[in-house]
Length: 362
Image (spheres, rainbow, N blue to C red):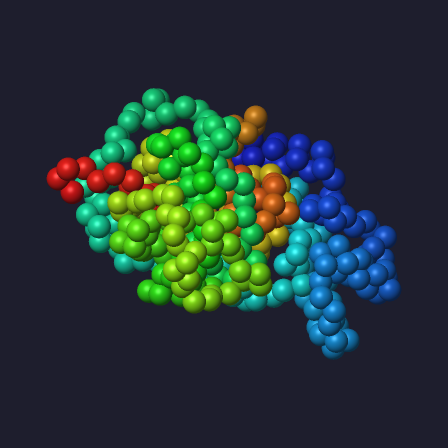
């Protein structure tokens, strides 16, 4: 344990020394001079607004947002100067409160315990055979196999569950069938009326919906709404169902070894409890020290692989749906095998993947 902590501290020092203390990613940077006076802070805020193409607002609204923005600046600046294993940044969400980010950018729901049994998926899960730990590779990155669509952008809509669903389905189909399609999240937002559209949903239930309703169409045929919102389910856009799914399987909770075995077969969907460190993540190894399992903001993502830093710190490769200007071009390294069976930010509590072909006795 002591050696692990030494490695973590070493990684922190190396990371901070390389990228600096006051740089913020996504193309936006600030210096100590920007924090030297009220005038400089307001000028930085205006520059940040222009950088992120923020819409015009009243003086009252801008002043209100400025207060929130500066609170974020102070937290980001203090964090980056504390030599943590990861850096935070000022991104497009930096003038939103914690509650607003949760309402606008998360939206996952927790399904019923052992929700895979809704489709007999426990039988289906035998497709992923138990393996000895030494049989798993020390690192795996499905992006290198050209079976992962690049991170998309859900916008200000609690539709993360649709992106996590289509993300695992896109990759599973590509791995098993040899075709990588960009699937339509809007299909689930509009047509899966058993779930909440921009007000949240459960990825496993979305896979069940697709299995019972003819499969998934492409993003080209059924594009994502701009601005993001639920519309009516348009049958004319559903004529080209390019991917079919038989059901889903879930991964046992509190078991990162089982999760690794699942990810070894295909990227999976997972649900996290996310907090401010996650919201403002820029790069490095996110440890999830600010997470609690009973947090109010649940967010669905994809796990597309794993690895280990040169310092020996283990991580998952997380694919988000907040655009490629978030994090490491839309991705995050999040701590793996932390000693907590729930995993960092409780990521083992609700994970699933699609089953394309049911076994004969299903």
